[in-house]
Image (cartoon, rainbow over all chains, first blue to last red):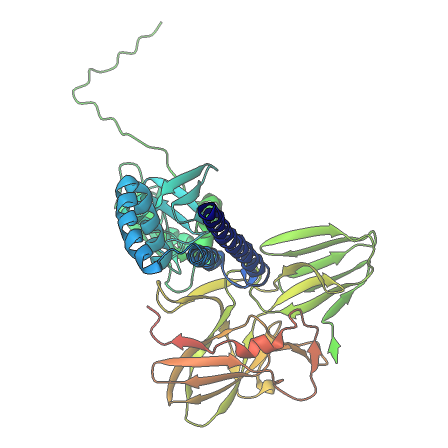
Length: 274
Length: 228
């Protein structure tokens, strides 16, 4: 009888401990959600998205993690033992889910190093586009033609990343073949004027234009200017569009490919009268 | 006391430099500059306002920095000298503070101040200078007084943060910047806009940005002499 009472009391105590632990866990999650909501209201607008998103993740998961640790106390779990157990469990989980852990760790390194940020136009692993999201396991890129590509963080971390926004200026380069009849000085002046007239071709570094080569059918000119990366594509397209207009206005010809054919020892043409 | 730069009523138009605004009697408003036109129809409002704002909106907002390159580089001494110079501005087109768009009376160029990796993109303007406001012929430009001091030497140009500028207007509707305080250091110039009008008798222009306190907390802009 006494044994039963003790058992019931033990079960009651255990249940109340579990209830307390669950309550702590629920309260913590609610608190984390509340903090996240407050952060979204008050902090999000003031920080760039690439700073805010990792910050939100770190704060949210830190609170949840703390809640889990605190919830273990009423259950009588020894925290120092938990650390050891956690280490062992970590090794086991690590072996079992190597790829996931690799992605997680790579994700954390990516958040710390920030070789790419949300909104950056990038090229990585043959994928080109704008970074949509970087979370702890994967990075999402929206390609130029509108597809969403999910790349595991371990792949991102080990691949060569080209970030087009990380410099203050990016070079626009256009080459064009002009007729051999062209006055070279005049052509240089027209091409330089085109770049100097464009608002996004920077004054410094100065634009440059030069004869690249004497091709089969044309003198090839190359023009280069630097533009802010946000408007690089627009600058290139506008320069290319206006290039022909300006050349037409200056009377400079863009030749078709030409081939002069010389025939050796050709028999004379016979012309007969009818 | 604030006042508006231009107030347009139906059936009137305005032109300054490359900027033009047409407000038809039918309520169609069209404002243009070399970088495009915007056309809207106003159904309720009668008056349209144009006011000077920092020259950082057209053709596209890229930077809040303005770099003034002196047409003749200036040489400063150790005591503070006031130099009067020309500067650009944009115009905001609005109805009762509600922004409809921006136009620029000037051709726009940008430049990079500093290095390609860590420099700053700035709106670029070649400025004429004079030692007194009477000696300056600003034309359609705004006027800026630069109080410069520091280490003796050459200053080819000065960049500064122009995000939140309080403009002033004179009786001839000429636009003025507040005083720009610049200090030449051995390898760079630091510059910051004050809130002080450059001369007496100017009226405050209508302000789009009200957070003036924030303007004062913006760090001074550093223009290095090496621009590579």
